[in-house]
Each structure stands twice: as C-alpha cells, then as structure tokens.
Image 1 (cartoon, rainbow, N blue to C red):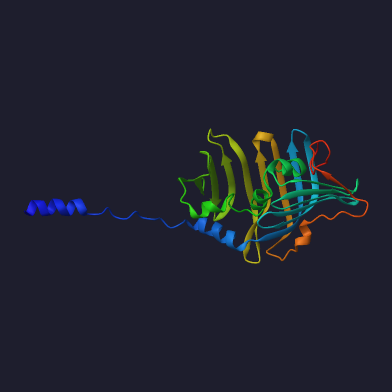
Image 2: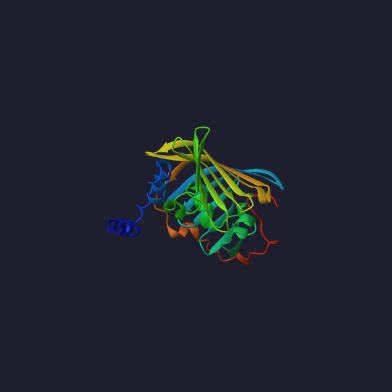
Length: 258
C-alpha cells in the first residue's frame, strides 16, 4: 500500500513552473524609448555612397511616429526637393519643375526617392534609434552574447530571419537584420550619443544596405524630440500651376544621384 501511495504521488506531481527571466537593463531602456520617443525634428547632413556615386546634402528632417516623414533637401538657393510620407503614400515636390509626384508607401518607393529601401514606418524607427519591430520588446531573445564590452541580443523575425541588437554602455549601437541564409539585409550603426534634456540620443547614424550596395550616413545638428508636429507638415498640397504625377520609375528625381 505504501509503495502504491508513493507511485501515485509521483504520478500526479506537477513539474515546477518555468522561470521567466526579467528583461535586461538594455532591453528595458529600449522599451522606455519606445514609450517616450514620439517625434524628431532636426537639421542634418546626409551622405549617400552607392553604385551611382557619392553625394552629400544638407537636409531638414521631421519624423512623427508611427510612419510620418518629411525630408527637405536644401541647396544654396533654398529647398531643392521635399519628400513627405505616411503609412499610405509617399509624395515628392520638385520646386524646379513645380510637380508633385505620388506613389504607394512601400520600401521600393522610398528607396527610389530617398535611397532608403524601407517602408516609412521602418525608416522612422531606424532614424529614431528604436527596435526594428516593437514586438521584440515583449519577446525573449533566442540568443545573447557578450564581447568587446557590448551585449548582442538575437531575435527571430519571421521566415527564419534574425534581427540583432547590440548595446554598449546602455546605448543601442548596432541593429542588424539577416535573412535565413545569413545574408545581411541591412545594418545600422548609432554613435555620438548626447544628452537632450535628460534623454540620450545618437547624433550620427550610418545605415548600409548590402543588397543595393548603398550606404547612407546622417549627422544630426541640434535635434529636438517629442515636440508637437501638425498633420500639415506631412501633406503636400499643389499650387494653381502645379502638375501632379503618379510615381513611375523613370519620371522622378531623388535625394540621391540617378
């Protein structure tokens, strides 16, 4: 009888609950950025390097989450080009031709007009130094490594792809997105973190896209974060003589060389 009771107790005993590890301090800090950081306004110097050469331009950049972008490309004579985007549309105003060209808010469209092969929401997150996908902030990493004074967290990102986040001294310094076969889709480096009203923000961002052999570098000058930005900043309205066009890949200029 005693042996039967022991066997019965063993059979009904439940395994101990799995231990859920708390997010690391690095991931907690990134989650705080996700909650707090809503917008960016800044002057910038953009450098493009790619198959079509090398270009440097002064720009004014405005971002409002989740997917609003406005980029004014400046010349010695004033504004040379304006790109405005949201989750539905990318529009480009060319003052020299007095045209507004509109296209769908896709990575291909934004690549055509600004040399950033990402959707407007992905581009906004990149320029705000946020996680590529907010869902990874609530997901345990599949791997973590520590080397050279930094910590790298690897997350599954669908279709067997991997997103990696690397932190040094609490700052996000690298975001890397890899396909299932290990090919790097894009890699972003953040540096020159400075305090903005108690909030550390990178003043230099360098993004490389190996599939298009393109690198874009931004140097921010006096960025402002979490300001109120009106909807009108992201709307391009035609004037009486402005010609409106639908995006065709042979009919529009870009912020980089053709």
